[in-house]
Length: 104
Image (cartoon, helix red, strand yellow):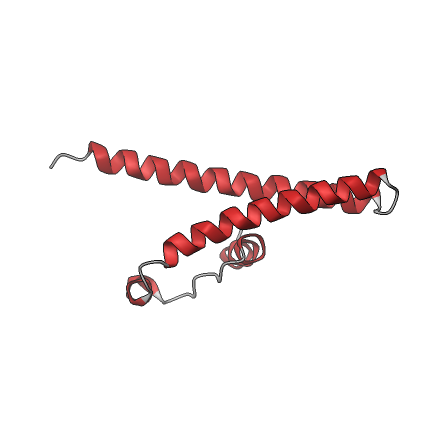
């Protein structure tokens, strides 16, 4: 996947603005200290919202008010959002463990 595809996908799934090329560490340092926490909260809320939408789509499919294709798309979107959230969590845990293993 190319970088524009990844950033546009992250913007659509996570609801977070993608990093602008060339902003680097200086741009990240100028942001407020709560922005990382806000981004994680937004990701978790988006994952929950996506699961709720998938459940509503399945209920609509059973009531024959929603097309089967739309329900399957909502389920796939919820699954991909959950997989993204789990992978981010895994990377955070791995980074924490690497920092804890560093000699002082």
